[in-house]
Image (cartoon, rainbow, N blue to C red):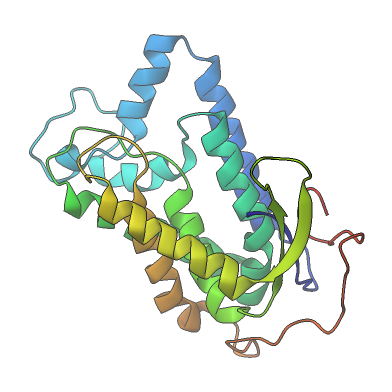
Length: 246
């Protein structure tokens, strides 16, 4: 199952969500425009390196303080698939959370959950010299918030049967989609040595938990937790309003 949109319209325009997507895309294409050596150096300069953050490794001629890479790393990505997957999830789920919090609180929430995710990873490998990059941790926080605010929201997913004969889309409650996603992150983290380079599963877990913890303090007072599902019903032939394929 792969989420492609949701059926959970909220009044308002999610300018911050769109802005975050635009910034991440702009930074990625700036990275891609650099010569290979400079592109790799940029990842080491602006990505979060636990060893540098905690002082066990020195970064010569670092353009920003080590603590600042907690933020700068959120806007860098390791490849087009990495960027595309993250931006799709932010597009689908970020607008509802922004509109439930308000723009300024959403920005702070996004940065805090991203920082919590990065630190969760860094504390597990404090001497690592492998840079951590990506918006996954902050977006995991958005997913955690969505789970508490809209557990019964309908998420449109793409189902790819094996062997692939016919692609189908259908709606699944958010609690199923996001709950399964979280369990996959935990299981993957338990099965993968945290010291290895690759997907930082525990950053995803840390961001998700941080999002669930922080959302009651950041949501507007008139927005309840465990919001009921929208009363409208869509069948498999109808497009959802949210998401790039809606």
